[in-house]
Image (tube, rainbow, N blue to C red; front, side, top):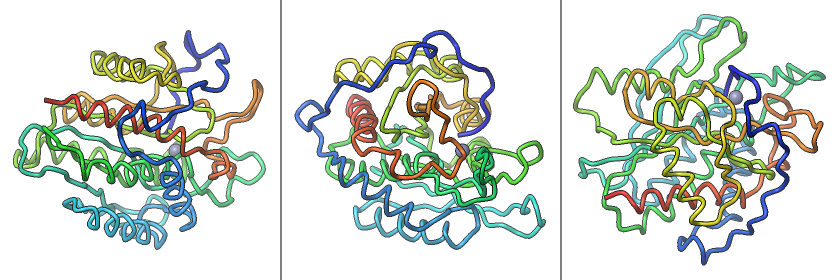
Length: 315
Ligand SMILES: [Zn+2]
């Protein structure tokens, strides 16, 4: 995720402690596996940085294509070119669309970004160090890999597309370089090309693997798609997943903005921006500290369970 527009609001101020719910298979009724989910996150991070247009990104693209093909999904690459923000060279940007139930006209969209920021520019000690993006990049990608095992078997009443946005943050200079390039292209194509699938609604996930997971209502999501926010947090309550906090949190600019403002698809953002340890801990966001050690498969499955239940309720 990216720039934070406003600071703490209301409910976020209180430190809420570790989530108390130990999630079991029985209360989710789906075969999401936290260990396997985490192993995917680890596998992605083992590639190293996955910056748009680099070899690391290509390796990740191969991994994802093989994974979802093996599970029987339809794979579509939405490819276009941009100029590299620093050197002006051509960069290939590739959004990945993984389609389940392709013939269904009623569809929902689940999305994440899968590129990583070129540098950990919030790292005070090493702002030109290696950025792995375990939570910010790999977490949503890995959860979708895990969810593929469930989607493969689920009797779906609607079509489901998992969309992996590229170039969310090919940012070398935060003042200069644009964000959300992949999702903006996706949204503009959606408007320009009526033959692309239509979506009734969607959910974006970003930074969902923090071992201390707390998900508050995100303010732009409330602005664009309040009923969907209430529906999703309502499902979490029913499933007794207390990491979903029913109070207002940050206002976040993220890939859901072009989807709402350009494509006019109601999309909400599930994001835990409090990526710290302890009451006065420094954030791992955009630092060399955003590594698998800070992440948890159990956290990922909490989000995955809510997403699967939301999909199951689509009619
Ligand atoms: Zn980021």
